[in-house]
Amino acid sequence: MKILCVGAGLSGAVIGRKLADAGHDITIVDARDHIAGNCHTERDADTGVMVHIYGPHIFHTDDAEVWDYVNAFTCFMPYKNRVKTTSRGQVFSLPVNLHTINQFFGRTMRPDEAHDFITQEQADTTITDPQTFEDQALRFVGRDLYEAFFKGYTVKQWGMDPSQLPASILKRLPVRFNYDDNYFFHKYQGMPENGYTPMVAAILNHPRIQLSLSTRFTRDQAAEYDHVFYSGPIDGWFDYDLGRLGYRTLDFERFTYQGDYQGCAVMNYGEESVPYTRITEHKHFAPWESHEGSVCYREFSRLCTPEDIPYYPIRQMGEKALLAEYVTRAEKETGVTFVGRLGTYRYLDMDVTIREALDVAQGFITKDTAPAFAVSPL
Ligand code: FAD
Ligand code: UDP
Image 1 (tube, rainbow, N blue to C red):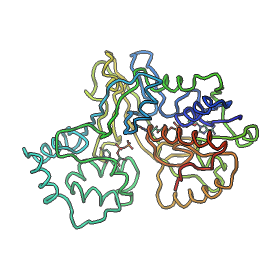
Image 2 (image 1 turned 90 degrees about the vertical axis):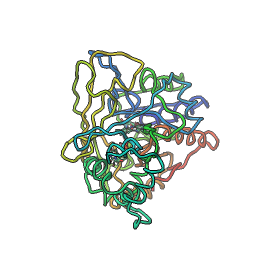
Image 3 (image 1 turned 30 degrees about the vertical axis):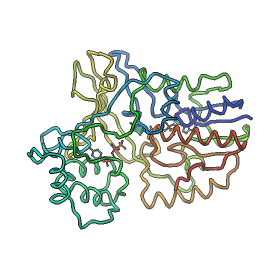
Image 4 (image 1 turned 180 degrees about the vertical axis):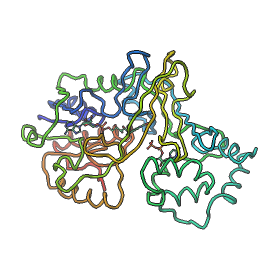
């Protein structure tokens, strides 16, 4: 069959490759002039540093099949994300762990002592079923740590008070009563040796895949294909005629430095008085390389306008109602499947994106068709 994948990010590339392997003829278009979507990496010409163009991307997963899949296309180097945060004139370790707790409270507690201290003296145990980000933080770490590390950062990141955000956003971050400062808890974690873009290039390298960059898809092109896998924005498919789904976008203020600017890949800034959320120093994502010069990004978050790149779906009540309307309409379309973070308006890590892409492609191979959504966006 003749298949079109809109988007050469992970969603489009993985679906396209699996269907090409099954004998289908695949066209992949992307409006950008490069592949790999938001995971795109590029080596800086002056310093030689591998830069994560759309912000820091660390691969982490518990999914052994996805881990094997990415390792089949590129060499992954060991990498553990260890994030620091600056607040109240000091540098602390994240996610909140025993070091953070002892340093913050000026104590030398052992794990069980710290556990008792946080749960009995800090945590607000009157909150039994936390629904909001704020309640979740107060319930599990208490007001002092919440105000130092989470409140200001979250106001900057999401542009609203944490009392208006769902608890699920904070649930992504663990609290540990030992000195483990690995930001993620997944079994597999690593960084592609030469960045994500060569990995996606290897995925796309198939005689049945035809790639067109700098090519914007419009809906009238769908008729030329037996099926379309669309990883563009779901509201964009309908020309935004019911309005636009809300996103946060990011501005990266790039600067260079001779030497080591901050000694780690990611330094968060917990306080609202510092206008940016974090600084990324890209060379630390490739600790096996050595570079004198350094490339850093100061990261600012703000509401996305039609001219900006949509990064984080906001998914508040209003957006969810609008999304439900688009989903109802999308389900009436035939010959198209909405995939990926924009097509389903969900925050998706790379491993989940790949898992869903493999599954939707497998479903198509089995049935010669696919529904509007393999995973419900609601
Ligand atoms: P995308 O990468 O957005 O690709 C969609 C592509 O479709 C784009 O290239 C776009 O140009 C193209 N497109 C859209 N509309 C059209 C159209 N009409 N015509 C043609 N082309 C079109 N995940 C992790 O696992 N670890 C991390 O550390 C991590 N960090 C992240 C940091 C940031 C700042 C962000 C925003 C995300 C992060 N992610 C991370 C998530 C990761 O970026 C996504 O999982 C992944 O990019 C999703 O791939 P996708 O193909 O669905 O979407
Ligand atoms: N967060 C915070 N302080 C930090 C890091 C994260 O308050 O130093 C909050 C913030 O609201 C963020 C959420 O926790 O959106 C999830 O953090 P994560 O690092 O997973 O953010 P992402 O990778 O989505 O940018």
